[in-house]
Length: 67
Image 1 (cartoon, one colour):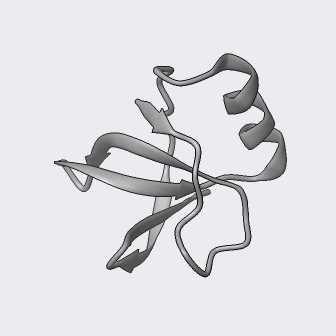
Image 2 (image 1 turned 60 degrees about the horizontal axis):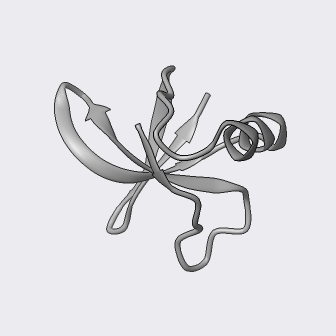
């Protein structure tokens, strides 16, 4: 679930703050999106569900890139 629209320090790509599951564990993490997906999140707003596959890019801060 989208809980915020923000970028972690050092990340230039569009990203959102998400509460969800990664590798079957609940977590809050930043999710890097492609520009079209990011625009869709901005249009629909906070609280929406986001699903798909991703790759963990960092564990501190916890950052996942949607693929």
